[in-house]
Image 1 (cartoon, rainbow, N blue to C red):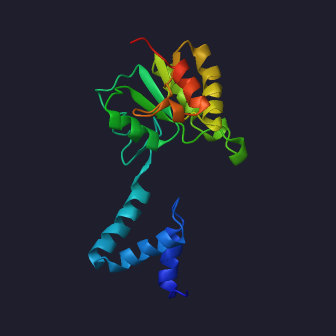
Image 2: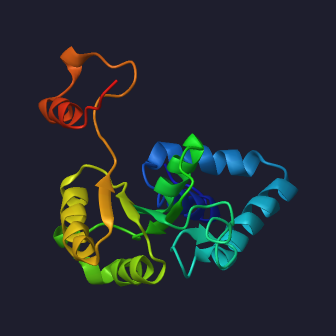
Image 3: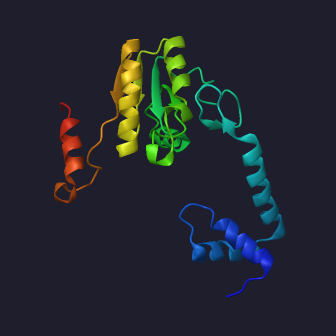
Length: 198
């Protein structure tokens, strides 16, 4: 079906979002066309404002409109514990638990030779500087258990251990409510390795 050029362009823009195919893009475009003009203007303004104002924190590389970010500037955070994550989405996920009271360091990605991403494209140098300058006692590696994640953890561990800092990795295993019979071998192995006393 042939769409009028402005509508076709809008659909094309929505298709650039991850996981959005042609049908979903069409639904979103038609939804936008059905919105009141002021809501569309607010939406467009929010996109532009977020793109212009949200940057990486110069200290931890978390996304924020202020520098340093809200977490780095909080006096309630324990400066001795640093949690290393791949990106800002992981910070948001960990903050939802309301359990972690330390500070974060966002790598802005993972080591991935297939994507041409090596350690020099990540904020590794800045992490090492922070660990040294801030007298960090523990670095928690909260990185996904993927091939890229494991490679990144191995690389970071080799750099951090000589600094005399305690390096830990979050435990992986079975989600709450899961059945053992449906878990894969790797998940079960990690669950056994990450066991603790009750």
